[in-house]
Image (cartoon, rainbow, N blue to C red; front, side, top):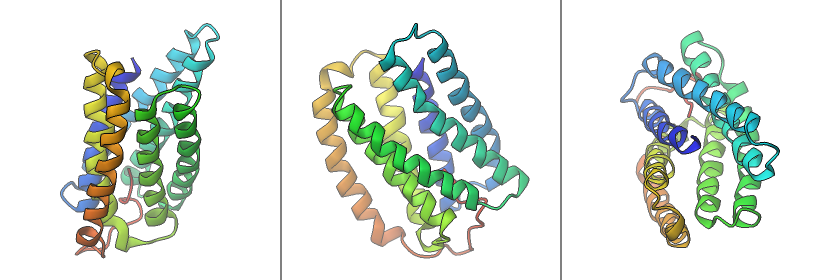
Length: 208
């Protein structure tokens, strides 16, 4: 069930990244953020209630709320015209938690690939904090580019590998590929996309 939600996390990161890049109008991204946000709240709630006390299932489900609340927060901001600083500082909270989930995946859950993926998310949500919470508009386009790439690398591709049963046997290989891709893609995108967009991005638009 969680792997299906992961697919649509990829979709919403892709759309929100395009929003930051200026290709998608902010309000038009609101509905998808609502749909995916609700999915990422309902899914972990179901998983927790049916976990029968399994600590690892509860642990895995708990992280999904970070995304669900983020996307619902985005929807409220872009549709309601609210100030984005609250979402920015919530993104800082998410980034710190993502580091903890990364460590747990490397250690307790023995899933190095998702350990790297959680580091991806920690990096992206820290960028959201810098853009929204601290007002670094010069990073808005770069953050959008990172979100677009992460939509595919941390959402769509892992979801299909999980749903087809191809993930378990390739965890360590996936971890290495993801780590190398992060350095090459995000490092290469920085000089190209860093800088203020042609039109200033309102705080309510600079969201995941």
